[in-house]
Length: 254
Figure 1: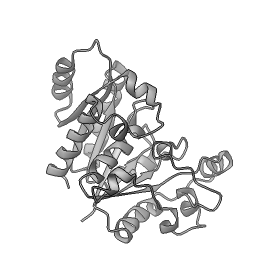
Figure 2 (figure 1 turned 180 degrees about the vertical axis):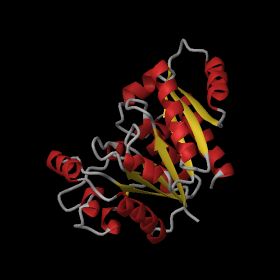
Figure 3 (figure 1 turned 90 degrees about the horizontal axis):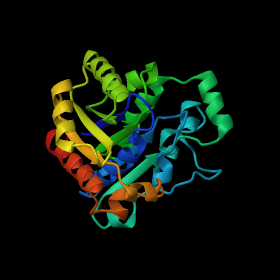
């Protein structure tokens, strides 16, 4: 049965999309079939990590939400060769980068029920093990309704005061929505921070499992979202942390 994993953050800049893409890759490296759905419709970006640029004839999630394309036409396989050799598959449902399309969708809105139905439909059509939903940051109606159908919420935060407070609010909302599972990921941990101290603070503050504490590093900055860290710098502590998170989700959720 397909499991839906929502990757969310209270505010932008946490590295949420980067984590979504690399988490999908880590799961696919175990031979699973995974889709990434970019529902950050106002500022999409997951497609860049997979080095996929929708062509003029390629449908995006916007097309489906605005009634001009079936969801299957919006699903594009982006499986890297390294993942194919492991027997896995990655599918991407990108959002449009066209400014006019973004403005139209924001102006006219869309049916969240149609989005949720599309997630379930593509899961069945592609026989998926997991769907990773890269959400729009913050708390809004669209994100809440999609989070409500998830099997697990992966909450991404940076170790600063605003994120500590905002994450607490987002997790409280998730509990009210009765999301069955949640994991916290602390991302972009500066070198001068004590990782164990941060780990203890987070676990004491929120009372939910901590999936990973991932470091901020020059290697990832140099990569600049131009590829998948898991494949480009697989031995890096950040990549190893994502692999460990994927295994935790496999053991507990998938």
